[in-house]
Image (cartoon, rainbow, N blue to C red):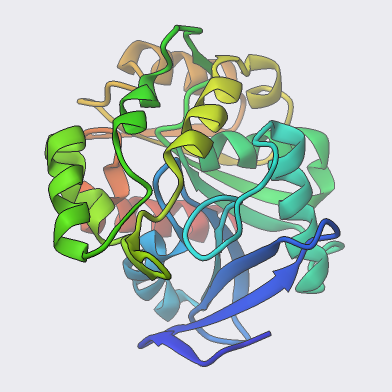
Length: 276
């Protein structure tokens, strides 16, 4: 249920999953606009797309930005596999009355992978894909890339103490994570639980080529050439092997849309204008 404005152009709302979990999302842009589903990556939240939604608003886009399970204001889940993530997406579309209306899906990293998995499983539900630095294959390694998060406490008595812990464990990533800190009954908490992120990271490693190639809607692959998650050679192969896929490369790391917001928004606007 809506709870009022979360920012200048946003309303935060909630729905309840069959297992009792609460899922939170931001409804950004004109209420009667064309819907676009936006999915953040690991460590992110729906609010990552507020600035992008402002850029898309004049074109009439209504951005629905979900806090995926275990992130932001959405409750933690017992499992973080693809079936669980996709079940949440389908639940949200049904909640919004969009289950029979194809719409574009934009996702970053984990969100991009969830988005193209949904397009492969439910091709009639997705009219276009915008993949922000989401790989088609991730090497299976142990420990997993996000295992460094296990050095972090989930909560601390003060925001300042939790930020200091972030600096020690995450270094240059701290500014990206700091905005997700939230008041908590024990003081302040992270925007996601470290153990959940390691579980989710473990389950996303591996080969996703079949799902990336499993839909035929138009796609934009927005790649950061300094990304340590998606190698440029793989990004170019993803674009060349999948029909109707455009590749845009920007001088940025894995968080392309946050590091280069104007250039990213311009590329996304061009793609949506041509594909809608």
